[in-house]
Image (tube, rainbow, N blue to C red; front, top):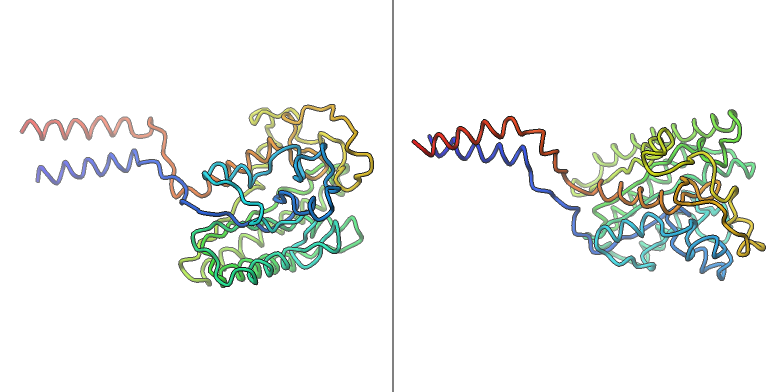
Length: 323
């Protein structure tokens, strides 16, 4: 009886103070999507013209590293550009909003599947796309959230069928709060509705896929929308002073003429947005940290949470030992 009580005490201690469990030991990261995750594909395809340097860093659509760079570092990996299929301008379908000859998400997935008869089950697969489906509105296209979600569902299903086990799918920030759309209430509300519809449908679809696909398929939904909303509501908490305007004032990645000589007069570390669409590297770092935390099976609670119960358990154990 005494032994059982002691064991129970230690089990309770383990419950109150669980060991910290780190993210799964992934060997590689494969990335699919648009300019939020592009680490140089458009830059290489355009012979270093888009996005223009040094305004944009090392082929990234930002002033520094992007979130998948930071995530790889947090996971202890050296990021391999060959495993990044994301292209700036990509829609979730077969179109590319920036350069028509470049791939959309579906070509990216197909290219990976053709080149990998069996996906590495120990790798992490990331999909973040959809923004360009809705920004196509500025190019006289009518956004279709239903089709966008169908495309994302097809991408997840294709990766799973190829052998991918851990698939992270990122939702969208509120596009209506981006500088590209927040210039008037009508545009802001329009893109807010599109974002909300997209994220709600994506959540429902991913839950459905989790039930329909093999039980060993782990779909990880990354809620970037919530992160952006928190930053915009209280930018100072995250070290920012401006979460409304963009540091550059406009999206200079699409107008590369003479851009390399333009000085950057703002402090990007204090801005949420680098240009009208793309986050600063400071924001990307927060996204990377969010992604890393989402990969942890469990987190460690605050020590104060169980101090009272801990004292009682230790007293009981000490009393039993004296007996």
